[in-house]
Image 1 (spheres, rainbow, N blue to C red):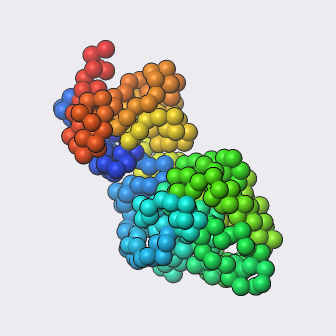
Image 2: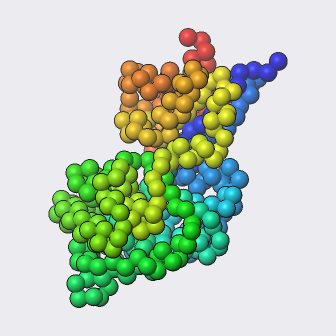
Image 3: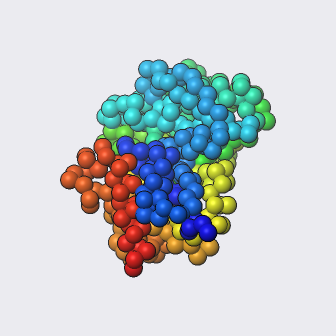
Length: 376
């Protein structure tokens, strides 16, 4: 007879392990505690950083190229093609890891490299595009992306405006004709893990700008600039997307894709589940173990562990979680469908050690959590 069927479905442990590596470590811990278990590894993502790694593990083909980074220095980027659809991660071209956040960077960073990824995929014959939008250094509303695809973005004198979100306050006219020609009939989807609109107190500048170096003055400037950008897009014939949930994701690159590329927004987590067979694995599971770097309040708002717990709960399958940190109480975890959890930092001499030794710690604490839960 075979042992219990355990599905291992973690997100990445940011700064330590990819979702694929985390799944391998947790799977090893499961086998340490339950040698006869049938373990299925299903690394997941939520549309933010790390989504491409999961799609690559699901059988996608990697395409490498060099593009303009968020401050013009070239960066080595890549995307994944799976069944004729190109999956592009904005952070590969304009990720915040490419810059040192500052007020100047927050105003100047752009998304031209994202547009170069899109153009390359279209030229390669992609029939569809899925753009993930988390982790960017930019707050330019996707203007750089559309410019790289041929959009004319002009000031009141008819000249091109500068790159970066801070320059968008000068935009008066946008022409998207060349963008539409380049796009042809390709379908575009935006995968995001947040629901923020483009503008206002929950918008791209106010919520995410400070992470990119923006102070109060820069946040106000960027929000006003994004409002001008939104008005110009509507005047160019684009739909009014500023208030759509998720339009503010990726510094507004989501709004630019919706307005300029006709993109529709969807849950990044649902997209990954659809492509990687997680749903089918959950249907056969006796137990699910998930996890991520920090299990906190944000985890409950569209992040992968909460999504896994919800789907497992629909099948009355118990869920355990192992994370770098667990900042939720037992009641909050139970309400999310997580029966028990364990944090690596609680069993390491320091948070830095927990990051450095994440793989062996994750394996060890998974086994400990599982033994404890089985003995309850």
